[in-house]
Image (cartoon, rainbow, N blue to C red; front, side, top):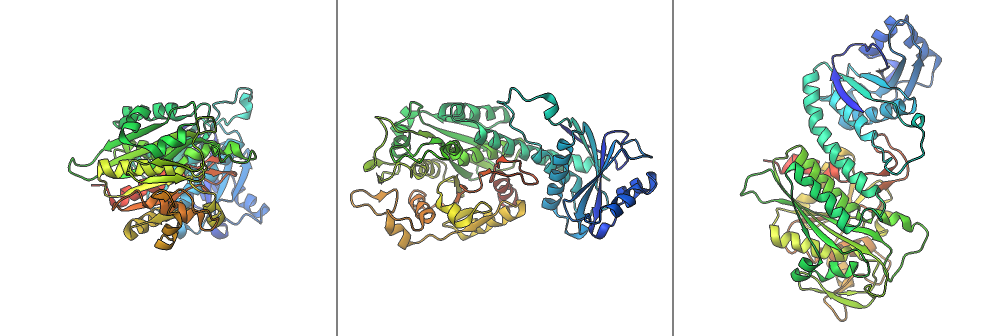
Length: 493
């Protein structure tokens, strides 16, 4: 699907989309359509009393006379004064979903009368985000079952400005789509080595990519990460991605992702029901990779580092056992009481490596870490844990701005004492069901040293089982837009 921008004029073919404000007030485009069709828009509104211009509501008028378009789609905008960027993106998303469903081959969106800056670009961005599909493995679907939309035009009073604003947003979407692709891939296709190969493709955008194999990780002392993958025939990897868009002397910002490409639970094996979902356990690494693509694609003026720990957690004769003790890169020993609490082991070494090598301004790690965070927050918020109030506040604000919401959870000495081990420096679970997500965050904090740090537990928000306006059912890429916004608002030169 090609997205372009044009002047605010009625199209010669395809579907035309116009806005209706709250209480049925017509935007200029809708009023023009009404005039040219002999009052058809007004009659359609009168015949549909439930359509009052509520935001994201839709009303279709087929085969309108008096104009060249094949169909008129009216979209509710609500109160024009409340149409911010997120609202406009949602409008674009619901319109796109309708265009796909109705098999329109071409469409033009005319949302004039909207005062929001970059409104046309935001509508186009929302449509682009909703257009994502993962059809790679569908071989029997008939062509008529697929969307037909090949061209989407968005009208703007200043098409040059809209095109410029959209160019940046399109690069963010590229990162979002990469993350969705990675999260959606099955584990027999995406495993540590093949994931690392996907990262190497970012070199074409100017990202410096290093892949550390098991020999190199062993030399660095990454016993925690290596222990997770030792039961698998797939070797583990650590991938380091650097985007150098800032000044040479600028400290980088660092993002660290958990990349367990499949998590059986290891010897502490999970129940069979729902285990197929565990291909998503690399969601944090997927977000970091997508973020690096977005930053490089839009040439962000920042030095950014992405570090992802990749392992497959499998049970076998060589697998890590409950009760084993491993030595992390930090030198701290870890008693592994539950091999299904493996993500924190991967992150322990990845976090230590990131802070030790790069001395970043801050680190943010992302991980589908605990089911406990879903019990606490459901699937609308990710859990936020931090040792730095400023970083926490900035993350929360960035999440609100892009509607990827965070909720800060506590950390403290009383939780920390729960993971003191009887025979090692730390144990990987507390032994209690209480505060499981907090205990996991407390464990990670032991490996960040003095670096400002935040941990985002994205277990509940990495995959959606239903469509939302800008996110089709499936991988959400929650975190890419949030972290891009964080960087843009506070850390670019």
